[in-house]
Every structure is written in structure tokens, then in C-alpha cells.
Length: 300
Image (cartoon, rainbow, N blue to C red):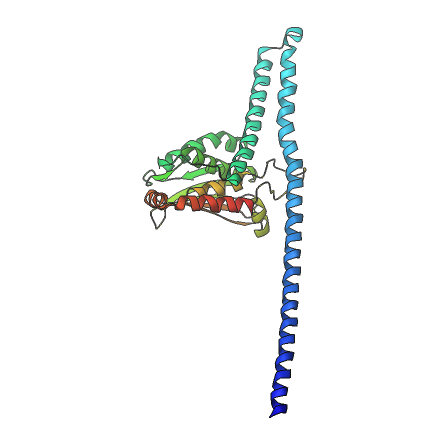
């Protein structure tokens, strides 16, 4: 009896030691895994930051050089007597460069506000079909010059939604601009809209452009991330358009989805809740949760 009791005590002691060793091994493995993941994330963040600084320097200096160069030519008007046609051309180039510069700065400020949680929406009832038609009209000339077929199928009887009209314009301007930017001549961009089952709206922007892999979609939705961050990329940009669009959609209580395949094009689907759901969410304080979620996504 004593031997049995002693044997059981020894066995329990050994099991305890084995359990402790196993627990230590699991903890060390989890620590190494966490350290590895943190290192990879830090390296990715560092790479994205470096690419952003290089690209942003290019995005800021190019329009500034245009403004400085052509404004200097205009200051020589008295000495050179520039023809009126050249003066108008220079002024137009300066204006275009200033608009581009302002857009870049506004994007940076928007991201900064979202990440700091100081972004607010001026919510009211909006007819989205009117907003989309106005946006599409601004891209008609660009699509014609780029030889891209731009078509829109937005029913006039869509129900109104509740949101910030300025920010909704920004959302779809960014998405459509991106679609045109990465679609080559001879391609097509289509915009469709319909009512979702829950009374909200679903807007689909599809293009026949260069497309993306799943990993590239993740990069494209990361603030300052670009699928092709090299200076030799065939389209300019800061890498802020899609992250801002997604964050603004989520601030409206909706969500943004991207499906894409390389060389097969990209489809961006935006789903916005009905105005009744948004009103109820506001009364229950859930809009703040959506803002928090959007900020977390931006920081991720």
C-alpha cells in the first residue's frame, strides 16, 4: 500500500513536471510566433512608410515645380511679350497643378482626422442617383480622351439614403477615378446601382483593367500602400483613395468589398444601409462604433 501510494505520488510529480515543461514550450513557441509576426508587420510598415515618403515627395514636388516654372514664365511677360494663348495655357497648367496639390493635401488631412477620431459626418437625406450622375458627368471627358467606355445604369427611382453628400461624392469619385486610372485604352468601366434586400443601396463599379491578386487588394486598402510602389509604375497616385473610400463607407454604416483577378479587371461593391437603419443606429449610439471600426481599420 505504501509502495502504491508512493508510486502514485511520484507519477503525479512527473506529470506535473511534464505539464510545466510542455506549458513552457508552448509559451516559448507562441512568443517566437508573436515576435516573428511583429517583425514582419514592422518590416511591412517600414517598407510602406518608405515607399509613401518617396512617392509623396514625387506627388508634391511635381505640381509645385509646375506652378513655379510656369508662374516664372508669366513674370517674364513684360520682357518677352507672351501671346495671349500661351498666357492662358500657362494659367491653366498652374491651376491644374494647384488642384492636384490641394487634392493630395486634403487626402492626407482626411486620413489624419480619421486616425485621430476627429472625423464627423453632416448626415441628411440624399438621392444617391443624383450624386452619381453628377460624378459621372465629371469623368466623361477623361474617359473619352482615354478611349475608355464609361457606362452607368442607375435607376431614377432609388430610395433616398441618409449620409454626408460631400463625403459620398468623395467615396465614388475615388472609386471611379481608380477604375479609370487602371483601365487601359479600349477598356470599359461600368457603374450599376440597385436596392438591397434590407432597403439599403448597393453600388457596383466594375472595370476591365489590370486587376489585382488577393495580396495586392490588401495592400491597396492599406493607407499609403500601393500595389506598384516603384517610381516606374505606369499610374501616379498617393495610395490613399481606396482606404479613404472604405473608411468613409464604414462611417456611413456600410461596407466596401473588392473582387479582382490579374488581367481580368476589378469590381468594387459599396453597400449602404437604408436611411431608417442609419437613423436607428444613430439613436442607439452605434454610429460611433462604426467610426471607431473605421479608425481601427485605418490603423491596422
